[in-house]
Length: 234
Image (cartoon, rainbow, N blue to C red; front, top):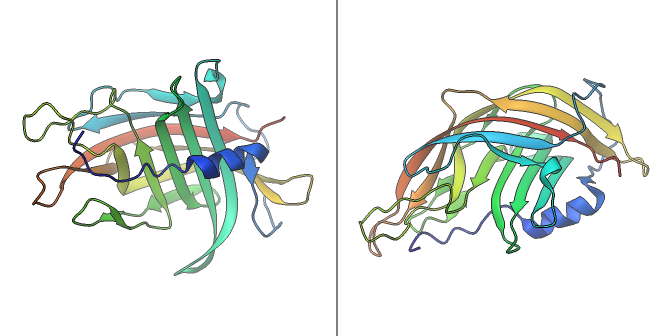
């Protein structure tokens, strides 16, 4: 693949560290509980993609129930405070990753948005002339796909020219259930969250290789999704 060398943004090392405790912490224990009855104990995301080059984009699921000897599912939930241009904000980051038999992350989804229920407008990434990310918004979504999901040949040479990290451009997430708790160390953690991305106006983009002397092009994708996270009982 000639495509752009944007590094897969799903931070495997950070995620694995988070999974050692399964949830990470904030520096404040001022939590709240908006829903104390999680709808299930499973953590998962199911999403569908539609756009140029998408091969297999319908009802892709990454679920904690799919962990097997041949595949490994990484799911994490993290609530924390961060200083931003708007002041100190309480944010939530969710990570869903599927590692195949080869040990590589084949699919992953990362979401970051403000804590609590309601609608969350995710920001738009910006990329430069090399295709590398030049601006990452505070609230965002990244969907990383593999060659089974996306193939785009812009110049007819049978090579895949598409970047496989799909970045938020115009995405609205709706959170309907949200619960925080305090762990054994007295640290605020994410206990439960449930949300969705609706069927219209929710757009991701990726860059594609055009030539060694021209700027990358852009491909656009619509996404719908339903997701849930529940704290591990282990």
